Length: 536
Image (cartoon, rainbow, N blue to C red; front, side, top):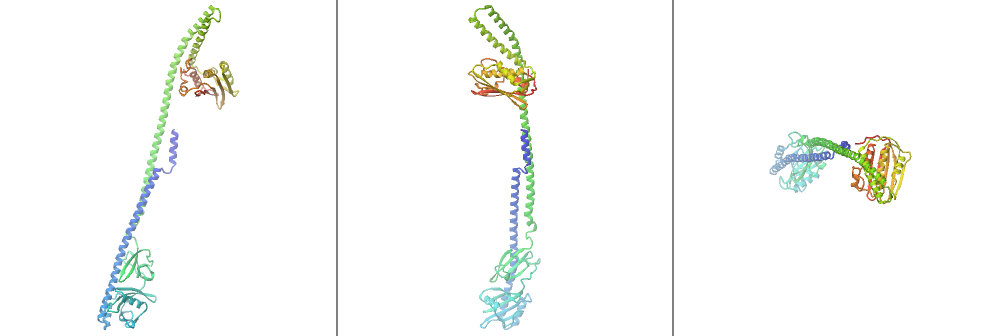
């Protein structure tokens, strides 16, 4: 039993982790991963929120600038409408609102001959010049709409950004502002600009069309950034923005990884603690079970030892009593036998006389009493074996000759010739005689008695089997107890003496019996018996 516990403990120690530790590790790892994922989503949402707010601020600045352009166009339209005969007044007013040297201001009037410039300031077309092509289409679009119209015009390799306001200088007029732009040239962001933390791309379109690009703060256009539409007059423009750096701080961006690393360490620590405690608990349980098993074995051995001591004390007392009774009864029985012989001799007469039959009965009963006394003395004597080589086949033949089978009993004998054991011949013969006579008694109606000898390495098995009445379990458990018998005659010492003899030779006796089938007794004796002494 202790070896089994030790084997189980060693098997558990070879496992990398126990199921409880694996469960703790999996649960904690799942919690950490979920926390890191949730934190990442929160940080990402916060980043998007800040990006949208910053983009909205930049859009507000741009819309405000475009609103100023519309106001300037309305102002110039009012000037042109009140003083068309004075071009210098329009030029002075245009110069007062000009913000760039490449910017030009026009008043385009629709006449029967087409669209012509009626007032001009800056570097654009001169007064009286006809407006056609893309410019004419844009001017007509402005005349058809109520509000600011914007557009991009190709000017050789460059582009011009145009703002036009129809009917601003009177019916059929368009106040026009155009500026040369270079969309491929990035506008650097400064700390004072509303998009200092953003990469901005502004499109004169409702989608990120490179042909409609107005300005950009980076060469790598943020096509995958936040798309934020704005309304410029009657047109919808689009701002695409992406952050140049984490808007919510580097710590917030690193927080999911920090949670993942810290949580992973905590999970490993908790798993290590759980595994350590589990191993300590298993070791303690194994120690408790091993020591409990050892204690139970020790208690069982102690109980067996105590039972043997009590049994030996009882047997010693029985032996002393049997010795005393045997010696006290032997002499009176001998006197009775002698007296019966003298009386019968003195009477003489016919042998068929009933008196002689009574004398024969008395002698027979005295002989039975003498046999009982002999059994008592044999059990009480318990001498140590006197070892000598004995041929097993000769010993069995002698025993069967001393105890011939009764009528109806057939003998079957088997064994290997030449088998020799070192035993006390008289004691083993007595043991075999006890077994054979018991077998005869168990077959009152006849049967088969089998006596066999089988040799194994270092031992010999002597078996006496019968086909008699057999025994139940209760009888088998008590047959070697002194003075136990289920026969009408005898005192139950035969098998007790037999067991004592076999034990004294260092052998064993086993019995196999089935009611109504028969019994089989097997004596196992070492080839060279080492005596263990006879218990008195």
